Length: 225
Length: 222
Image (cartoon, rainbow over all chains, first blue to last red; front, side, top):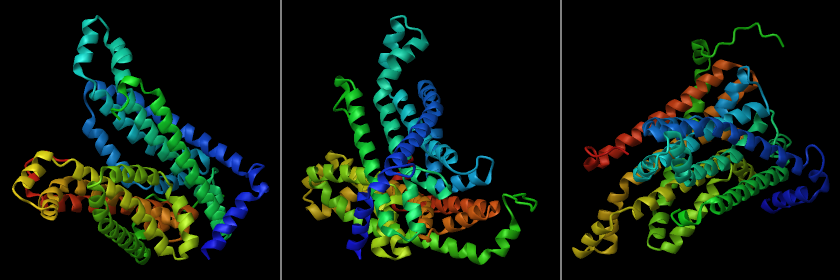
């Protein structure tokens, strides 16, 4: 039984027809990545300024923890279904919004922690050199907090890529469609193939981001994790 | 489609008329969560203890659990179901896996965070490895273990809903039905109940943590 399902999955993956056209694997992967980028960008646009400001002012640590814990308890699907029942509707847009909502907590809390963890001595030195508050923020504090901010973006990106497949349950696109269509037609080889594709994409994204984060971290800060 | 029928977000009539369905879904949800956390905790503890004594193994375990955790739940259920061919087992195995990842990580980090001076002192007093583990290291790691349990439970409660992809999603099943029939009250009721389950479990575990760690009551809350 196992073999036959895996075999079917391999056969499906080897069928050139599944690799071309609008519903083909490359097109779905691109759509998946596009939606993920949109969701992370949306979340970052909201969470980064707020997090940097809160951390800079040394406030909001408790509030961000509460936000993060509450968001963990709320199922993504519930949010998707609620969106579908309101004006936001079905498909890709509500999924991007829902994924962005769940991407906010990691970005926010990492930005707050990173900014709050900046050595006060560095801040004092910047002020002592005559930097204005804004200059010190942009040239000293944010660069020092960058490793943690980057880690938050990475966590949220991986999480978003894993969330986007749910779009297929509310009529959207991306790689999740392969899984959901397969279930609907009881073609389990296809289900497994879709699942494997999503897994590979998630792991590849995690690897690429880990590498990118390492490459972008200044040498002096590496090894501190 | 013109909607002329009132479609409220909350409706007591809905709750009353569907009481049976709601309790069935709730029961499914709670029992899945409880079983998953129970099994995961039983497996995670020995695994974490095993990895703790061997730094290289600990690194591998942390790396592997981190990578596994990025696997989307939908994909995991998709790969498991054709192999297990059982709805409940599929959801349960998936949930155990995710809970396991969170728990092993937290227990391991908790054990690693035990003050070396404390373990040294215990060793100096003549404690053997087993006694050291049971009476010194594990109690000291308990805050991290409880945090891990709370985190795993809350995530699991939310994750059960993804089980709708195999038709066994507890309260998610009601959400899905409400979504398909565009009936708002059903979606909202199921969502609120899911949040309530998560919150209740979280508070219960927090209280249990306070009960088993009387020394932490006056200290800083985690």
